View 1 (cartoon, rainbow, N blue to C red):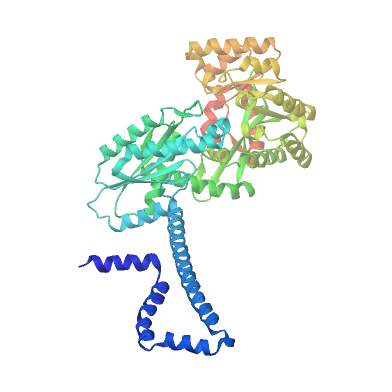
View 2 (tube, rainbow, N blue to C red; view 1 turned 180 degrees about the vertical axis):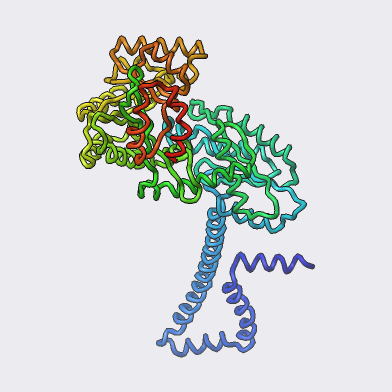
Length: 539
């Protein structure tokens, strides 16, 4: 019995309402017209009034009615087709709004909605895990093989991700080569790690594209999501663990670590304060003495950066300099410190020099030479009293460009020194091709050299090389009388280290020159006895 209404509904949907109404009207009115003999009366009436052409008019009405019926059927079917097309486009737009068109996975918007829903059903007893997956070595794929290969690689990576995760979780492409997974099937941490290891192995297998084999990998950040944190925070923590996995060497997974996150947050705060500190010259130029070892006389200072944060207190240079390099602020930091140093040193004895280390990133700045020239002019500081120190990592990429820049510095009257000599892998090539005036032996070879036979051989070789090239040598990291005596026996010309003095601010340089260096002719024994008192006065 139920089949009849169903078939009627299908018939009405297929033909349309208007044609059916016309048809039903014809069925209803036909017996009435027949009963009233209207057609017969119409026929005789038209015969009686042939000059009115009523029969032609009647045929016209009938033909128009038939045409109207067919037109109604056509329009009804056309309308139905438009409705279906609109519904298809609506569903397609809704899918595109929530899915990545390249891989077919959920997009960021849909994933965040899913996180929100999952968080609402997450209880204290539940364990839910989130994974962030980022492809390693993906950028070279686009560079070497083109964007079509990159798209194919992303699709293949998404398929491998789906194959490994299976029904255990929902996957999304957040953008670029970054994916996210929320595990929803009651897995424990061990099972999640097992999936992560399989995925790491799978992603290292080459992809085939147009006869070429494409090699990538992936890094994974894992997060155990509890009910006391929001989905947004859980995603941030998973992203933080992904960053940790990448910094540890890539092609591995890492769990979220609250302590590392705290350090990262602290680092971000320092980075935010750094820009303002540079603008206000709050990162100060401090000065560590450089002496002539044979005569024990002061010849100059190495310029070092020191920062006393208004809330955190002193921040280690290794911390804020690394942050400055990573955030692109190292150039502004270096120029600020050099400007302060030149202004302070311009009032000192003209025989005293200053040495300033330029970071690799700052050395590659095409405006570096002009910036140094401007500082020298503004501070009225003699260029011949300045030594610019560069490391091998600054020059190794292109000796030709490095030579041009070093020649430009020397044309200003500035001396140039190769810093951390002995720690690089091309020191001899550097000395042979570039116009250095001095080399600095790294502190790792100098400190406790009297008790390290291997370091003694290395330093002896460096001294012989420097003598053959007519270069001055500065040994940094001298911390004991024994170290000083050994270096003096090798005829090392210059030295610096804690045995003589730590770095001090500019306002204490005059005190060092007047009070401390006058005793150096007596040797470091007498000076060592006064270090504690002098350091307390300097602070």
